[in-house]
Structures are given as structure tokens and as C-alpha cells.
Image (cartoon, rainbow, N blue to C red; front, side, top):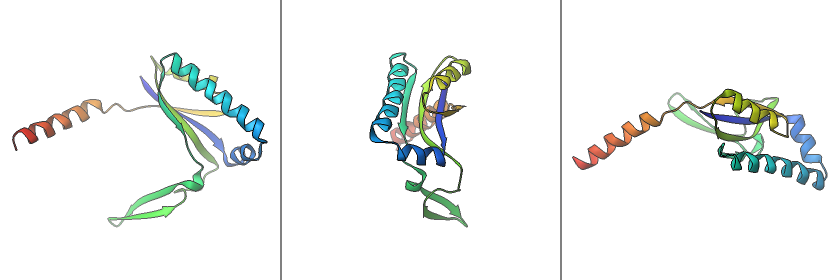
Length: 133
């Protein structure tokens, strides 16, 4: 099964991290890097990224049929997602074990909805349409 592990912290956590001396920040990144390396070697890691802070976000909303683009997060939140990992594991227990091993705080674990069959059908229709002109 595929899961997304979202690495969650508070705005206070982020502020504290940003104020750490460079060597402590480097050590924290090293611990996270080690976790990613271990999961990758075990064949569980499909992908993942660190995200820039919520101040770097841009939000697109549809209102009255028009797209409205605003700088910043859509909502003010006390918790922020600092990054994510996409993992392929046998079950929720294995995903939770990975989350428990994360060295940097809270992790929200969510199963991924598999739309691969829908995508394959759509691609087949497009290919048929292209063949038949």
C-alpha cells in the first residue's frame, strides 16, 4: 500500500529551528537525511521533499467561476507541513513504524487513493481517439 507521511510542526517549532546555530541545524538535517537513506535502502521510499515555509505559498481559489491567486497560505494555522515522504509498504503498521522512527517530530500518515486504473483507461481512450482521428 502507498502512504504519504507528512512531517508536521508548529510555527513555533519552525521559528525555533530557524534560530538554531548552523551546526545544530546541520545535525538535524543529517538525522533526517539518514532516515531517508535508511528508508530508501529498505525499498520503502517512493519519493518525498522538504517544503518551503508557509510564507512562500501561493493559493489559487475559484470564486464565482474565476481563479483568484493570493500570496501566502489559504488559512492561518498553528501547524505547518514541513515536508512529506511517499512510501510503499505492506500495511499501515509498517507505515506507522516508519513514522515512529522519524527523528524530527510529528508525522501524519495517510493512505494514498489509487487512481492508476482510471488513468490507464483515460490513456487508452486518448490512444484510441488519436488512432481513429
